[in-house]
Image (cartoon, rainbow, N blue to C red; front, side, top):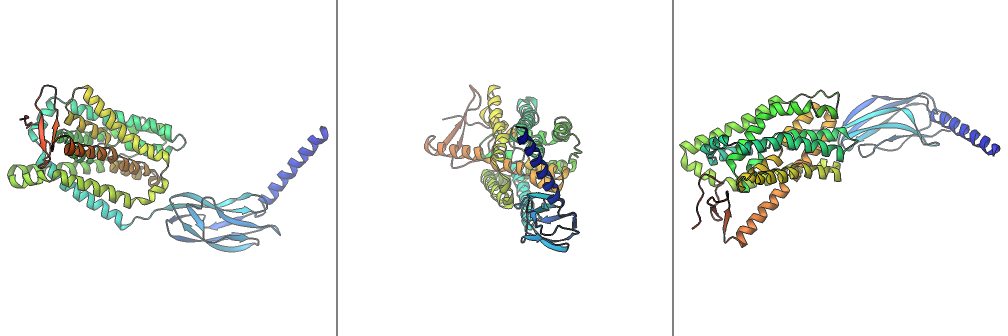
Length: 445
């Protein structure tokens, strides 16, 4: 028994000696430069110099993660002196190049740190500019369709706006914060991406979807405006309360100019639409009639173009990312609609409230991430708002299809929407579909 113990101890010391000896076979390998930034699809040439190596020792340069960056060819190191190799950037992330002793699978301490980034392309700029222009046009249409007198009535009984505000800035931040710890317990950067998405104000797409789903457009626009203005206070409030528990040393700057630009971009087209509605009546009626069709095309355009321009992010998708993309908007829809109905809101109002709570302004989320984080981590964490943007329209699109099927096969070409118990119902002809107007219910014949 004692002999076995002695033999085991000696073997342990022998292994330790061999590890130390072979691990230091290359006593000093230096890289020039010592760290690099390479873009996806591009190549960088790196110089190295080996000062000493044991005779008969074989070492190889290798990449820790070849999916992010890889060597053009295998580099064997068996002699001292200079050398060079080429590194190919493949995908977003951090990795390093190091030297590995082939006799014993250990690596040398010296390494070349690599950051692989995505180079901005023309299609990104085209997408941003085209979507901004089309959204401005759609808001002119909204300005033509809004019943401005109804906005004053909504402010007198602000149950809808209060529900929208509470859902947007209390429910959604808590859901995104909690689910972040459930889905990504060991990845604070992705949790930050989820949290930034949850604290963002309502998106302009909520107004478009409310129109498509025959909700209360007046209420939707009012809630979006309130949500966007409130973001000036609520975003920093959440960032410096729950946000600091994700990154204690975070130095996060709230993008006031971005939010202000969004507010102006909302108000100016609405104002133009109001002027058209008041002074160019025929044009206003025409823009009102094409609102739903134009809104549907815009949603389709955004979805397709967003997927095409962000195809690279699909490589980062995991089941956790997909679940995160579904949980944030879908929980907002469900809880918003249930609470609205419990409080006896009309069906158009409940639709507007649910859609407003569930849809986040992912553009603000992406800007916050890019403004606050290192450019590489910003690219990596934007997978969350992109996933949310992709998953957001799925239940709404299915609901729209169901509504159309119901109108076609079960309602004789008409949709009857019950407003409040005991109140008249309005009928929307399938042949002539205008933006919903809760001021002018039409009694059934």
